[in-house]
Image 1 (spheres, each protein chain N blue to C red):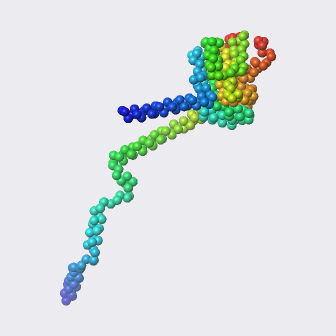
Image 2 (cartoon, rainbow over the protein chains, first blue to last red):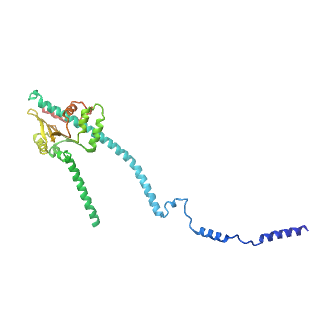
Image 3 (tube, rainbow over the protein chains, first blue to last red):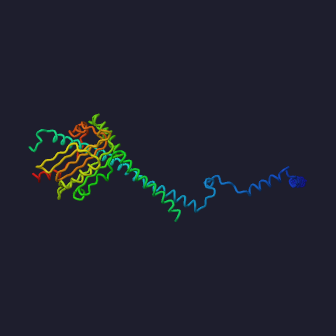
Length: 126
Length: 196
């Protein structure tokens, strides 16, 4: 008796489950739209391709090479810049020294010339 | 090829103008160009040559730097500020000796350039001479040149700009400028000793 009741229960559940229900309104359209969306290529937003969208591999390789070369040159150039500054400073001090020397020499000679020209004891007595 | 030539020609013309312009500017400023201070005879004969050409930015910087030093008096600073160019040629001789014939082109060149002798000193007993020339512009001294010679050394100093002789005299007496080791003329001393 009990087994008959159980089997009819199972049968009713199965029937309920197998009942064909109509799809909700607009379901097909939504599915088709989703499929179309899926076929469209996704924009690459999470890598650098958004920055170089049309860059080729070779071009990227060349660009990377250029950047590396620039960095190496910059690094090598740093000491040269420092040396240039030192050389400039040395040249500046050299110029100052030369100016002082020329003025001192000129002043010295000017005094000598004045002494020779205007000193009464200059006449061939030396 | 034609395109390259068509670019090269204007660039060459532009460069020529720039070079000519800089030369003309130096002339217009009243300063001698460096070529006016080349004495080939002395240079060939000398064992040691010292050349100083100071004008433009290096001179301005040197004046500023020297002006900041201690012991620089106001008159010396003012004199220095007026300078537009400073040149020095020193020829030192060890083997050969400088004589009057060597000096003749120097004096001739200065006379040709319009320099007027202010003081000329000489001594018959010693082969030494000292001349001071001035350059007048609008009846004012716009430069001075000192030519000194002895058998061991010839020096030509050219200072362009208004000359304050009092300030120059003070500098010559060791005043108004910081003490700097002025290049001593060892060779001159040697030469003088030999002469004696």
